[in-house]
Amino acid sequence: MDKVEILQQWLNMGKDDLRSAEYLSTMHHPTPDEIICFHCQQSAEKYLKAYIFFHDIEPEKTHDLR
Image (cartoon, one colour):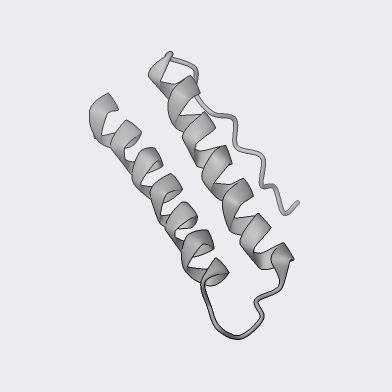
């Protein structure tokens, strides 16, 4: 996979999280604010990872179950 494809994946995932937050915020039944904020945070994180990847910095993997 080349750089453009990886960058596009990060941007698409960020857009999907933002869309999820927007959708949840328009639901008629109460959606907990924490869920909406979680998707906003995830979107921002993925856009940031796309930005630093664009500048040739490999995003560090931070999820470690050990």
